[in-house]
Length: 370
Image (cartoon, rainbow, N blue to C red; front, side, top):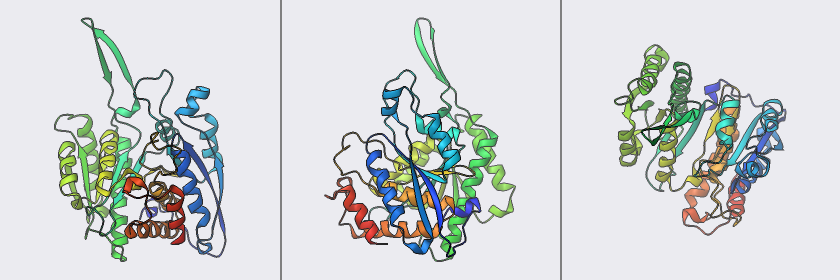
């Protein structure tokens, strides 16, 4: 679906390609689901001509509590120098301020130039609401630049945060979203299943209130769309973010590709997971021009940590998404098909999907379907 966005689809031959994948379990159930992704890669049939080497890397809140560092420089350097792609598990997010701590995945996105978070949300036929959308979230700006201050006025504290939207970053995310829309249509025309007959892009914003910042986001993508005849086949739409949330839950089947600034994209993509049953089945990839990190959408889930019942599907799908961006769509497609077959059968599933299976039982069942 997505590898052509990078114009990086690999040709398949009898030669075996060895890829080095960084594994960053992070916190909580990340330590249980990242091994599932590793097992899936190791089990891929030989016909794909792929072998994998793995490098275990550190990051997370638990690491910070032990060392005072949430994202070691060594982790970033290993990804840049040694790895072809990576998988990131989950990170615990303290609800109150912890002096010196900052989210390692947010920092990693910035340091690796991963400006897009791509989250496909697709239902399995016969299960739940019909959904087939991709949410493309700008990953580097908006309120997530974390430039905040607290000051006092008239004896009362006031907190302020800067919301940054730049033309450069918006052009990059807009182009990514438009290219994904074209590629999804190309897959449909080759016989891929979809709810949609033609491509569309929905730009989500709040420029009726934030006329300058969200206004720049909307105007930049509209200009990009209008200035390139390549995108003429894509239906261009806009949605105010509150209306977008309402319509996404009322009629999710109308949305194909959705692009949004960082904060709105974060909220929309987690909300969309409710349409397909669980955050445990929704994948994502953090993507730059030359690197991709697969990352399941769920959190560290401390309530089920260590019980062996965390859902590995989001991580397995994120592993496939990583492979797509690395240029191996056939291998990715086989993983997607095996996962969809498991979900459609609706027997071997973890408790978040009202099942009784363990993490490992789900992994074994998906591998059995290769």
